[in-house]
Image (cartoon, rainbow, N blue to C red; front, side, top):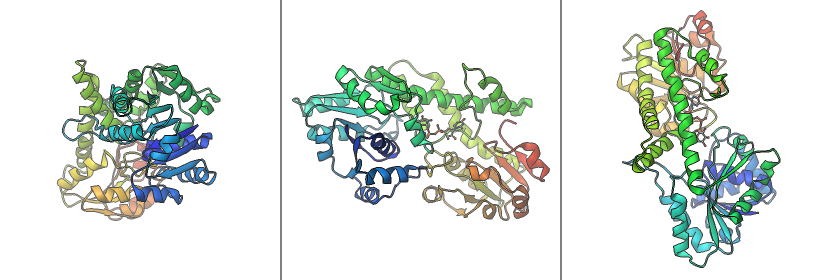
Length: 433
Ligand code: UDX
């Protein structure tokens, strides 16, 4: 199969490289000259474990190409994937579909012969219909189908998620389009990955419903954590106790500072907007959004309280800034709410993140960035873990304690055992334990 992939963000680049690795011929297109030049020379503009090697190998073996202009690739393609950004629109929280519609117009102009246009970007229900209209209007002669094929990959585990997904969802209205999609994903069926064919609108909704459910699951356990703190219970044991029920499942029950990232905050908000407009308000999701927003700010209060109620003039060492480990992504990271709130309360912030510094420097002000956890702790009154990078899981606690001038440790990811940390002389506070 010949595939054109429009957009080289997380979803586009990972999907493009993985499809090439399946044996298809893929051209990834991005309007950004510098990005394309970098990719052609074997560089990868995002931080994702294993992606650089995957890209380099497939470029070397001639299956993966990059271009700034889509004309040639779209003309020759059996399937054109749209994997452009759909950010939250300023003001109303709806998904901004400008990039999707522009891509549709450009694809229409270049298409030749039967082409399946596949939406991989997360788009509100009905967007496939719009894309279909745009193309049909521009090219009444063209033979094409518009398909929805949402992507469920997680940052930091993207390649594995793409190659070993729980399922593939395809929303297509014709058998001809389904046949092309089956052929594209055939290598996955060897591992017996289920492929679920639905209508286009259903498929579009599945993506939002999945993300909203996961966001709700996290928010649920975060509320249980708050309750545990009040009644003297342990949230990790609660999570294990309920998670072992197969109907609930143990994943995504880790209490923490609230979910962030490029998907959950944006997609939950967009779903509430769609649902309101459709006259079927998604009240559980609306509440989830609200609780999660408040939670990030409440974490700053938790830290202040752990430090005795006053942080003015105190130094706080923060470990982990990105919204989760194994990424440099700072989008909607809890650190972006917590750090400014601590600064406002008068604290001085020193920080360390294994990969997020470059992005964090653009978003945070007056933070002293350090190059390792112990340097970060040097002279600090308190140490706060916001993101659970592996390298923070086994710190030498004595060395850490010696480096600090205070003894407060706030672990917002529950990566340490309370008794253990306390035995090293720390005043230790975690979440829901
Ligand atoms: C998510 C979905 O998992 C993925 O299927 C979708 O395609 C895109 O959105 P991602 O945003 O990369 O992926 O990260 P994920 O691992 O899902 O974590 C999202 C946020 O939830 C992070 O801030 C994480 O720290 C938080 N989280 C996750 C928790 O607080 N507790 C958990 O138990 C799990």
